[in-house]
Image 1: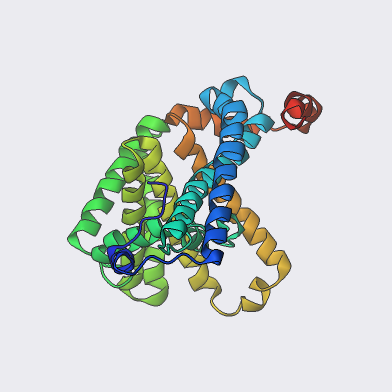
Image 2: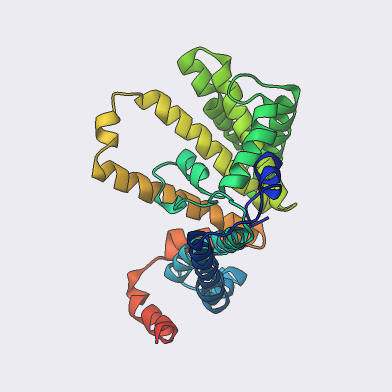
Length: 308
């Protein structure tokens, strides 16, 4: 569901209002429709068809640098796809006399993963919060569903790490223990079980969000990575507290934070886009081991026709 998810209590009252279209609403709607079409048809489709799909179909055929740029390209593609559809829907709604709030607020400018989810697909994020995270207990308590999904998650991590990563029982157990510690640390810092419950509910919500996108290991891995990243950010905020507020407000910290967040999101996009787990691993291996700027000249010569 790429367009905005509009709540009934926000939308239904507007249906009963008399139709009235102001000049500024028509102009704003026109701008949103045109900008959405540009994002989708000119930017997203062009990059997808001419570069991103080729690399993700078989990353082993390409250099590490080409794989890296394909990941950056897909980050642009998925943003332009989703926000383009949203802009078109919001623009048409303006013409029809309906007001729909924005669905994307420059998410790649986020300085942490929590802020990213406040800016990315806002209507979906709020839906996941209101209909999954809060019913599970939110940041106050855990429920039977929380423990059930977390148990299933750890079982999946244990056997998945053996099957996908080739780990033995000992190292698979150590991996599960490490993830458990991440979930437990907030409770140990605050001496409140609510911190543990919040992390477990976040993880469960993101796992279900990944499963909502499709019944694939890659979508579940994508959801798990975001859930763990949100949990780690909570730990970071608890550890740093207010004593780092001065540093956090500096341009250097903000720049580094934005870069780290963007690359974390891009890393997760690999699993979201790749057709299967093996393809994801090949792409990550290529980027980690074969990125060499010696091929930069050949790479630019290859893509030069794109901007002519």
